[in-house]
Image (cartoon, rainbow, N blue to C red; front, side):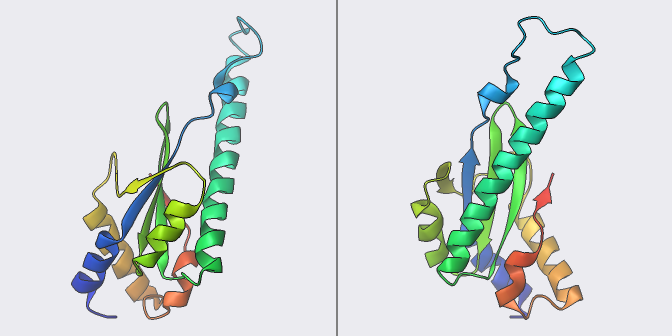
Length: 149
């Protein structure tokens, strides 16, 4: 597993995105014209709610992958604006993609980044894993926290 270009090519071939739409009800103020000093608090509540929803979806997807024996994957979170969130998964085993597709969370598609270069991300991540000794332990890849950018 020390051939990083080959490993990166495999992960990029098994790259999928799950789009989680924004939960609009969180962004709709219960007060028609909120006091300007209240607006930051309302926005903070909306962001916290979105983050909680995203975290639950991410854990649910991880759970299904792990339940099916897929541990050699990592993910990256992208977005959070009006277009919602994108959970990007890079899997060592192609059959993990059918697990992600089968979970009724968000909209599944082949890798679909909006603002980052997947090749650069995967190579950077693999180099970090190699430096820390995690690359050889593919049963622990999923334990790495995602990158929110």
